[in-house]
Length: 354
Image (cartoon, rainbow, N blue to C red; front, top):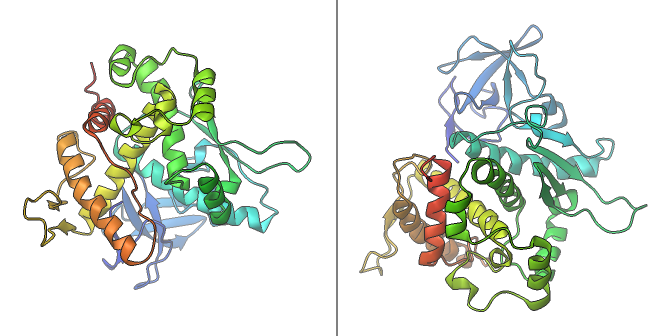
């Protein structure tokens, strides 16, 4: 995630800000220019001021009134929702303040996901634009029905259990399932990987190329998952998969690798924005040395640049967290096979897979 500047006073501002702390102008994110805009109220909407998109009319996304979105819609458009929120199909009961608080966390993660998808220029059809278009349902458990809401994907419909936004509940589930990492943004990145498999691989004519890397996805999915949960991870899974769950089925391998590609590129984008340079004094062979000065979203950046810099940055992040007594933010190891799979995802999103 890049750092932003207020177009009115140049003060550093962040992706979720709605007010500039220096000049007190209202702020909103414009995905078209990938910039935070400074706004002044006028008439029935807002007008942008300063160095970017000056003197244009804007409206906040309709979800702004719930404190869940700070994205902008051009004033001349009739669409009430921004490019991210137009994909919402079901939102929590807004009469319940606790639900709204959880949904706010959901939307922060979702908007960060969409920031990346837009930077990568990936297709983003809605359900109205495509029969299997992308749609989100944020659901809570119904006390009158058995079972729990399960996070998952089905033909473009992504369900995220609202309980996942509760930190204590999510940690409980992470521990119960023996996962080293479980976050809201991780759920979004994984589940949308399934949707992009449909869009870019299945519908994009890349099945053979994908199967050559991830394996034969025609094997029975339900049986494969049952075997995974009954027998546990594959032996020595670390040699071939980014996570133990990735070994359950080629679809899950693709989605897990896709999610990690987004984890890595977003964090490298953040490192670049902050001017990170990793140069450990003890690293005499320069294995953990990197200068994050490249654009991870560029089609000219290679997977070797990405993976090499990520090795250094992830090691530094883990070491810093340990100094604070916190868990490793990236408790994974990237084998050569996994780097090759990440390279496939990198080529796929940039249209280079034949």
